[in-house]
Length: 453
Image 1 (cartoon, one colour):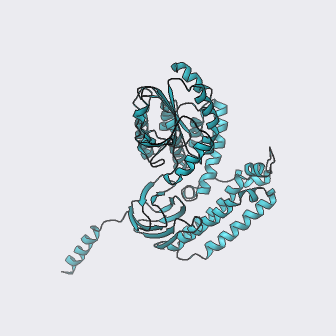
Image 2: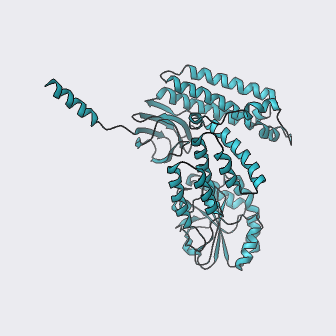
Image 3: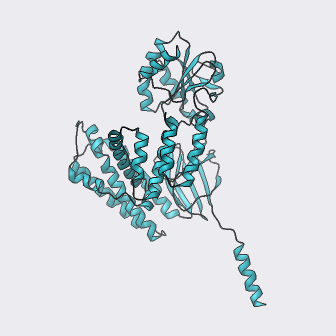
């Protein structure tokens, strides 16, 4: 009888489902509502809609690790593991105030939240910090690292392994600040051609690039590895006369750890493939070098989706985008002429750089068979900034704003990962170039001439 009882207990134990999810609960006060994004260095991403002062709950099927909470005026790293219930609260009006965590991992998550405030405070004084002379700057960031380590030391209820990993992350944060000192000091101290000493650079140059655990934990370590790969890629591109994306793949593939190499190569494809002219060449190279089958499958899907954006295919549509001149405009309203679209935002410096060139071309072609359409991806709450800039800068053409910044089907279907982005359609609404030359590029006029515009 006892044997049967034990057997029954074992059988029940086997039927207990494994918990492979995290419960995230949150509330954000003093907000018009919006979207909160959970992401990770490995590529996990989920968006949660929220309303003012209304508690929300969501299930995240994730593995243990460090993730990032982002919304309009808030940001914080958060450590989560399957089985956790994570609570947080925030005030939308208090940017620069820490998110408040409760529930599982509250100690370390409140530490992360406050740590971000220190990082934010440092950035607010970038001009002051990076204008310091080399030795003074190095003393400053060493002092800040020591202060951060002391704050970590008093955090309770965290595993020793996680504490050690975070301590290394604080060291990477200091080294990453050093890595950009040369460029920033030249700018803020107005020292054109400034170079740091070999002694200052040694720690950066000698950093091992093979710590997989730290790569997926520390954004600073990931940044340092990425910087090194970008530097190597420039040399490869110059030496072999190949494109930057191909050189990035080559450089990343030479890393000692396949896991890091695969992630960097995957990031390169996600960024560059939508804009690449020789997509098949890039795909073939990637498929040869990557050993991550899940990544490969995702890239195959992306490539199939991008084929819909090839020349002569119908363009994705937008409907009833608000027009600066009043009313709304849909893409179908523009049929009968070529359409040259500028996808931009008021906060985007490279976008603003193109505006004078665009205005010049608009004037040159004002009576030709072409519409010039600028589509702002500013958030709806920043609509007044958009209206003001269009008016004050006397921006011509057709000025529109999306109904939900980047989160519209038109932007997503065009795989727009960064702005500015320029798109050219023919009079029937078919794609001529999904990634057309910029106004500052003389190739744009060559393309217009080729099309007889």
